[in-house]
Length: 309
Image 1 (cartoon, one colour):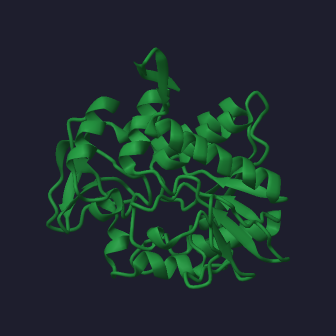
Image 2 (tube, rainbow, N blue to C red; image 1 turned 180 degrees about the vertical axis):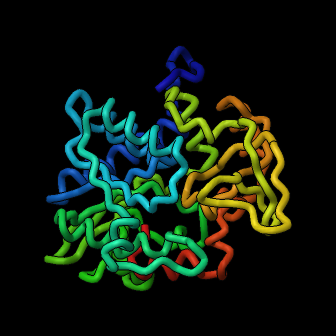
């Protein structure tokens, strides 16, 4: 809290927007720890989950984060992100629970789609991990500005005993009062970053000097064009016939499935430059770079109804 001026000798104080968002999110994280018996934090190594982990660390400091972090590993992750995930888990000394989509495929529990995308088949793996570990609250880094279906979520998003979401059957949230009561088999998805925007996230990362994976900043990469988007050429995402590979300076706005997540042309190699870039754009990171959200207008909502994050 900082003084902003004086009136008749009396200092006037105000709190910044970032500090208000931080306080709200920390309050929500503490409410989850107080109300729910077995919470966990979903951690992918992406910028939103990184901020979530930082907020959880602040919420309980100097004690350790009192719940495990969960990563649903599709097997299609960017190597830089997995390396970052492991460094953060080791640094904080938190328990990491990994749900492997590849292992589920090998065991015949799920079947890979013909397109090669594993986003949809993350859902049964997540639900299985939640059931096996008894997690009745999963903290996620989703924000309302990302996508239309995200905007329908409550902060405490109720899931039935099949792990499914019904946007018409959600609990009211008045005066920041959250209902964490669940019956056996039911659960809550909790989104402490609901009121944040992508720009807020980057301002906070800059203010707190939070480390992020290197691919969030501009770097030279071998890429190719597909469907009007620029994809990094790799074993997971090889160019097709007729797609020319070239080297360009790019960065990633989001770090999902490497087979479907595109980069953007960019020279933003510092947090400040990224903030300038985001402030000037009018397309969300999912709309600009996530091929799976272009399948249909309701692609995300369909997945969320099935139990997706």
